[in-house]
Image (cartoon, rainbow, N blue to C red; front, side, top):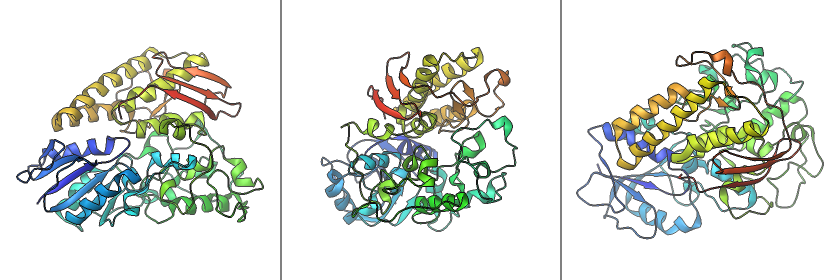
Length: 430
């Protein structure tokens, strides 16, 4: 079987996950730009400079597409018997698709060429992909809510909350029941399971079409206030729900980021009208609430997902003078060292080092999305923690101002509601 692995735009984290497959004797991936006939599996950057064979059994794509990839995708589709998309960026536009709110052109691959199999997730599952490569119909998805230990009552909500103290929540109580929005209602079970680390699901692996709109409708129903005008504009809008403010949009500081975090570019909503800054990372971050930033960078930070996340935490902690426990400082230093090993594993296509580094990252951060990290501490006690009560995460105060990390790599400004109004960062390695 000839398999081509193609990286498009954005974060390479899903592509890096495919490194796990190298340990399988049936698959060999080599880090080259050109596909050679005698090699079974090759890694190829999808650009205009490529040499393709006469045929490929399966083409696997990660990353989001733009119009610049149009010719490349069409040519590969001609020679590929099957096309798989791997990860939320490839299937739905992913977190980078939030820049669609600023009118940036981002496409799921299925909007350009036909796709035979979509493997959603942020991070997507290498085990899922491997199962499909071995047996096209083998992998069976499970709904997240059916596997979640928390029990939803679907009662009407009295309020929407943006932060929560996990100590005050029963371990069996559904996040949605207290107004802490969790998209597990529309999501498949996944390997990262952010819900296990005190973080509500944002729906990176939905099991239904138009999942974001359906989730938005469900929360509106639970609030008993689904008052969304249909005459927002002749072309629609992603920046607001209606000309008149309604109960659901006023309850959420970021409707787009809450419900469309992974699917905005694949939704029926047209591009937004907010001007682009010219920097896609800034376009993603501006408009997001401060409490959401660590999870966003933990997912889309590529090879720098740890350092980018810790820089954000450090900037705000330093600005609001939040004291850190020594064990927490040590954990973060260990994570930064693990990021170096992770980068080395990705650069050398080393499956053993990749497995070792990611396993240890999970031991400290919960998962590869760093869902357990938060300002001032960690959300859930893990086996590797000793004095957890000293660095247990709590809701943070919202303070207007400009914040810069100790590394000087990140600077952002918050308004009085805790919304990012300006973002500057150095070029992290994605």
